[in-house]
Amino acid sequence: MLATKTARSSAMSSTLRCLRVLELLAENPFELGLLDIATRLAIPKASAHRLCATLMEANLIEQDPRTKRYVLATKALWIGSGYLRHSAVYRASFFPMQDLAQQVTGTVQLGVFDNEQVLFIHSVGYPGSPHAFADVGLRRPLHATASGKVFLAAMPWAEVERIMAAHCDKYTDKTITSPARMKRELAEVQRNNYALNVEELLPGYWVLAAPVIGKDGRTVAAISLTLPTNEADLEQESAYAARVKDAAHKSSLQLGFRAGSQAVLGQQ
Image (cartoon, rainbow, N blue to C red; front, top):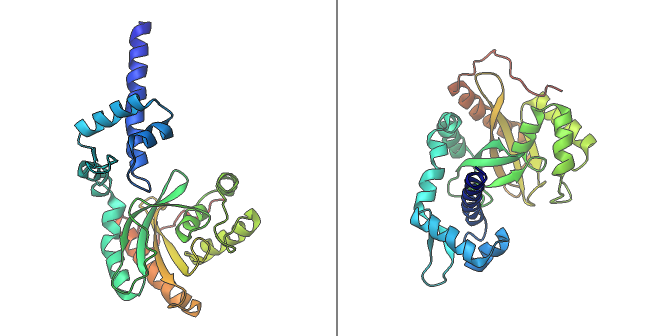
């Protein structure tokens, strides 16, 4: 019995390490040599080779014949995109985001809450849009993004404090790291039903975001609009905010949220 449990534990450990290799290759620089993988996983080089051989056999990674570095294969994309193919919020927001992106010189993103971060699952931009759009799969901190503030505004304050205590890096001199300041900021988000981020993560850009509400009245996603500070005037904030909120509202309706229903926002 003990031998069986040990074998199962070993198999599980190898499986988890294989998944960790995929995670490593999904991050910048998106390609790693065998020694790099072994070092990051703190395992012998021979063990790393076995993991990579398994993943290559499954067609999930491939090796560049010139550099000998490993990269994700197209099958990994097919598996990962299954999340979008099954995502109701992605389908509900697709056309409202397209419409919004055509109205403004900016990029439009769809973010969801994942592992105490914003995970961007869709991005739309047209010629003339800023280059600081969020790639699909990119994660951003909650406290330093407009979309993140939307999610924080829907949480009990005790949860906001806990998250800020664990994740509150300062990215620019405008990043909000004070809980008291954030509490005032989130009160504004709740009052206006949208969040504003002015160079709090990236200098040269400001972002507006509005909540996408599910059928149960809870925030399930955020639609955001990124604008360069040299092309957009903050005096136009209300006009841009109205467009972002309209796109989020249309997405919410597609998810089953009905006008007149009570959104669950900021239960503190």
